[in-house]
Every structure is written in structure tokens, then in C-alpha cells.
Image 1 (cartoon, rainbow, N blue to C red):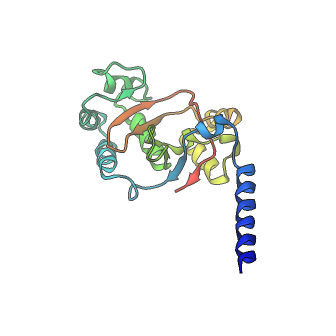
Image 2 (image 1 turned 90 degrees about the vertical axis):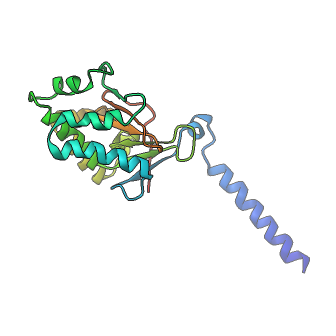
Image 3 (image 1 turned 135 degrees about the horizontal axis):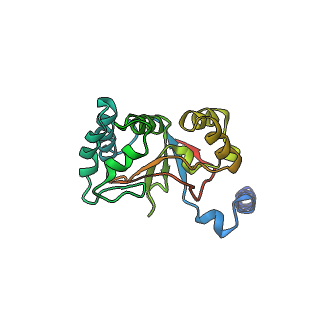
Length: 197
């Protein structure tokens, strides 16, 4: 009776050793926060949904000035590009092909539609980032990811990002408590394989 139990324990121990051998061993790999991919808003915390709805209201209205409502929901305004905290709307208008900021709202709509990355769930860096492309390795992206990349970064811009393996277009970050942290562009660090949510 004791031999089958001993055999089971030996098999379990061997399995654990095998798992340890195939797990990432480097500190760099284990230091990277986990990333999960999601779409829509149903799985997001309520405070994040509320912030997205406020941002979405500006997009639906076509009035960039209405984005002030979402900006002012924060105790500390979000970082928007390299603008001053009192010149964020003017900054976005200056980076839009039209004088009214419609292109800026269109870009914002596209990145929000692309899906989000939930970074380091439950950890110290827990946050939601749109588009999720900013948090994955573009060198290993799936065909559907490639379509989304070229939707948010058409033509040469998307091709350059794919070649570099890093998304460097506009991205937006919100904390699980609904604090809008940033809307920025430029190269992103820590891109990695992601887990579908």
C-alpha cells in the first residue's frame, strides 16, 4: 500500500522539477509585469468605465473642448504629450490636421477601439493601457494584431513600428481607480508577449 503512494510522490516531484526547468529563469523575465489583453468595457472596473465614458462623450460630440470634463475628473491632470497642465486641449488641437481637433478625437477613438492591455494585474504597476499594442512585442504579433496596428497607425508609420517591433503611436493609460494618467506618443519600453483576457 505504501509503494503506490511513494511512486505518486516521486512522479509529482519529477513533474515539479520539470516545470521548474522550463520556467523562465532570468530575473529580467520574471521582473516583467504580466499583461492581459481585453476588448470593450464590460470587464473593466467601474471607475475605469466612468473615465472612458467621459472621454467617449467628447469623441461622440466631436467637440475636443468637452475632453476637459474627463481631464477635470482627475485631482491631478493627466500628462498629455508635452503640454502644460493648463494647455492640454490647445496641445491636442496643435497636433491635429484640422483647427478644431477632430483628427485628435478620431485618433483617440481608434486607439480606444483597438482594445486594452491590463498591465501587472493586482501588482504595483496595475494599469490599463490603450491600445494594447503598446504593451506587446510587435515582432511576434498575430495577424489580427497587425490589422489593428495598421488601423491605428496607417501606412509607413505602422510599417516602421512593425519593423522596430515596438508601438510608438498615441496611447492612453488609466489606473484601476479611474485616474487618467497619460495620453502620450513616442517609443514604449517593456513590450512583451501578452495573454488574452
